[in-house]
Image (cartoon, rainbow, N blue to C red; front, top):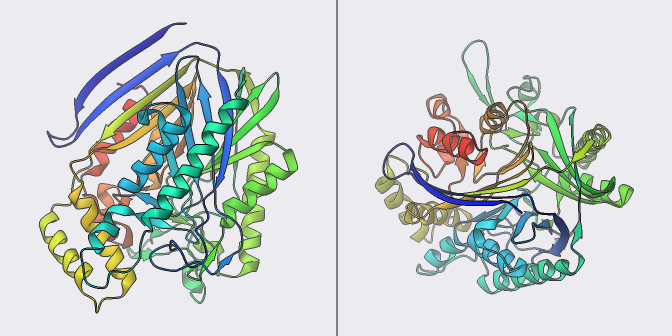
Length: 455
């Protein structure tokens, strides 16, 4: 076995924006295990996004992932059917996954699929709220400990079934009438914000799809030609309708589980850089629209699988970066304003939680966010933080145009939206809601190049 370990430090955009890069490369025989754990909150317990308590379980929420072992170390990637894991909550999931696999936290990537019929959780924000009068329940810390313990146990148990894999497959297909841009600028220069549905707003439905990545990518790991797992990547906000007290893994979960049942092959779905992409052009919040969107996403997954070509698996290289994102220029002003909202008992509970998230991120701005990539030969899997705009995904694919690059966002959602610098000038919801600064673009794009091994 040949192995190279190295540690370098780089400065991106100034002394505050440091990123440490750790890369591990090996050519040892590879083994893989799959794991799954139910992460559904209990009835009337840990809330769904913001403060909605669960009353009905339409479908369970699942955490699904793989452990890859190279003979010396283990690496974990996991997709969770939650809306978001922020700050110390994301750290908690990574630590528990690492403990279950018997590996380092830097060797773990955990992302959410971002369904809005699921929890959006920030333990740091809850701790801030608990210091205020009549705090709303945003995060049940006891439940978080229990659910991550179960997840760690599932990972540990999966190690009994580690099996070799010798080939990797790549496929992709265009998805028809699912994703559409949330940010449209028409020929007259007017900005149009189109979110996750266009019910009652035909003028928004008639606007073009806009700037998206229409391709769904699939990576297959196999042994002697037999698929052991398929990992899908597609960029769009995944919600059809939400706001009620119901858990559901929504469109991507329905498509994912249907394909798993058909193929009898473990399926994982990651949400790409869909921060400014949603299903609004094709969604009117009806169950019929959800079914149609599911069918079209499923058709894209089937076509991507059908296009898959296997090749011998190349050497494994795992890269890990500790990334510091810049704060908003008006940081002190933001913190003072949001702290006042967080403490005001006359403000809606959900708004108090939202404000606490902004304060929590600004308090951790100097604590890095861990991001990762996994390369198997010329196939790259990139795991990014926040609600990245689709431009970052297309940029990553352009960095390695001759390789296969699949991108997942929605890792640590502490920063919220990670926008392009241009979007701050254009306006709209995303830059206004971002908890990170407008200078993120050069920082994250340099980190992407490092994760893909491009100097």
